[in-house]
Structures are given as C-alpha cells and as structure tokens.
Image 1 (cartoon, rainbow, N blue to C red):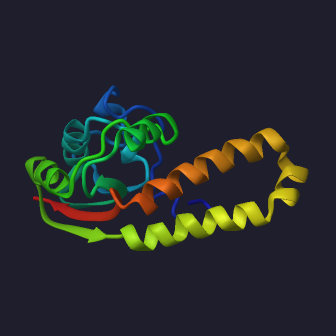
Image 2 (tube, rainbow, N blue to C red):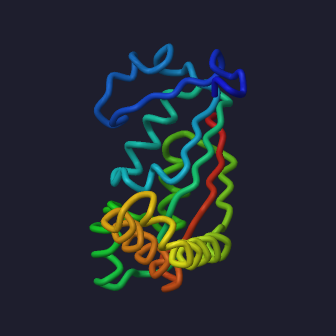
Image 3 (tube, rainbow, N blue to C red):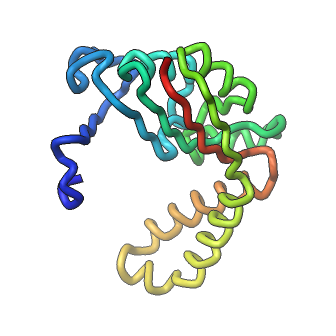
Length: 175
C-alpha cells in the first residue's frame, strides 16, 4: 500500500470481524468504498454474518470482491477432514448458498466467476515446483517447514483434483 502510494486511501484491519466493534473499523459503518478478500473468507464459518457485516461497512454503491472456496458437490468424509484440519476451513457454501447469502446481505449484481479449473492447475503446479525445489527450500528453511508446507500443498491439490472443491471470484455491489 505504501509503495503504491495508496496509504491514505486503503485501510488494513486485523482481527475477527465477527467479534469487533464496527465503529472502530475505518470511520465506522457505511464508510468503505470496497472490501477485498483473497482466500480469507474460507476460514470464517458464518458466511451469512460475515457478508452482513461487510454490507454494513460499505457505502451504498460500494463493492465487494472475494476470492474463496465453494462446494461444487458433496465432500467425502476424507475431504471434510482435510478441509477442517489441513486448510482450517469448517464450512464451505455451495454456489447457490453463496449467492443467496450475498443477496440477503443487501448486495446486487452478484457475479459468481468460476475459477476451479484455473486454481486446480495452479495448486497442482505449485506442488510439483515445490517438490522440485526441495533441497534449496530445506537449505533455507529446514526440513520441518518443508514437510509442513508439503502436507498443506498436497492437501489443497488433492481437494481441487477431487473436483468437489471449487474456486470462485465473487463480485457484487451494495444497494
């Protein structure tokens, strides 16, 4: 933000949005032009409350841009376990649920842009490149860190290759 000279226009907040005092975020409710999230919403199980809060924080006409996971078809027990324990993702909405929650929160013009195949390609390529660079990575960061990331990258790749986990870019405007 600083490097791009946007510090006066962009505000970053850290914390649990479901538990915070909205008045303490920026200039309070209705003060933001946009909300952007890259693979963060997936860690917040209560998407309905999350989207309601996002709507409250946006000005009328404000936009939301979210890249997230969604459920393309029912997960196996192994996939549910991996999502919960490897990715820390306890609730993954379906396409229909995501759109419904977004509209119920006061957003319109919801664009649900499918990213599953693109992300599947990315996560499988990331895993292969990571394995190819094992020696260099271990030299820099150590074996335990390598094994931890290998486990995570493998789990995410398996979830996308399985076909039940999807990726989405969701864009909408607050009315």
